[in-house]
Image: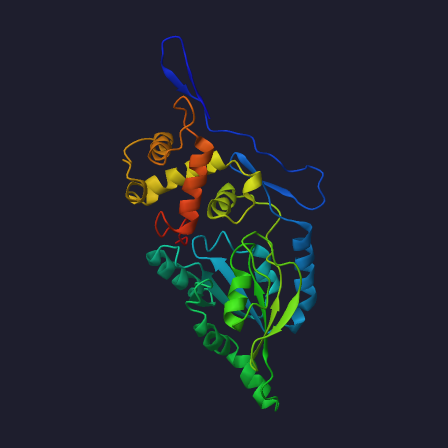
Amino acid sequence: MQKSRNNNGSTNKKSIKKNYQKEQQNSKDCNTAKAGKSSFNWYPGHMTKAKRMMEENIKLIDLVIELVDARIPLSSRNPDIDGLAKNKARIILLNKSDLSDERKNVMWIDYFTKKGFYVLKLNSKSGAGVKQVNQTIVLACKEKIERDKRKGILNRPVRAMVVGIPNVGKSTFINAFAGKACAKTGNKPGVTKGKQWIRLNKNVELLDTPGILWPRFENQEVGQRLAMIGSMNDEVLNLDELALDTIKFLLKEYPGNLKERYGIEEDAEALQVMEAIAARRGCVKQGGITDYEKTAGIVLDDFRSGRTGRITLEVPEE
């Protein structure tokens, strides 16, 4: 983004608005949801198939293990799952809890527990919390296990389905839980492509399915939160604008974090703060013009990786 000068020498900042709409309107592979001023693609065809696959196999399942991102526990839930998992035992894993605000982790654990879920904090990347999952499965499926015993059925494994939106860390969790790389993992949303039954031990079998996400968002804030944490394809996002919104949020909800990370003052508008970050990080083009695209990349990468601090973007409704 460049600055233009009028005849009086004053500087008029152009709004950070680049139309990155790369979606194909007639694509059969994706539906488009609008969040704020940006357009997002997030319901590829293979995810539609995954939902149908879940519907076909749900009768085989005793337990649904749902991974959510601890930074946006509600926004990273799939509303279809509650209907699909009706009358099934439920566990919610707050994954990436090392990146989220610990005070708000406690709030979310209390929120989901009151709704009847078994809840654990998790960091599937480091393995923190993974060892507790087996014990929680036994607790969640206590009625099923006791019912089997009364029927004379012993040691029949609990069949569990692992679900979660793209890039929530589902495959990484399965790898950590199983102790080996039995599901393909990657950093790109939607990398897990097909169905796999995974025998973890004599007590548990997992059905791994690709994460599914609803095709449209009526709530703009949901889409923005998902974009901010990196659960969507950056190639179709307006990253300049997204970084600016991230800065606005941090200034309001986590004052001091940007100052600590970048050594800049926060007593300014978000755009000025972004320009200060650019100056500190050397994101300046020839002629002293701020490189907003490069700055946006730094801001979002630092935010998503936790270098800006442990941040949670939403709290339970009272």
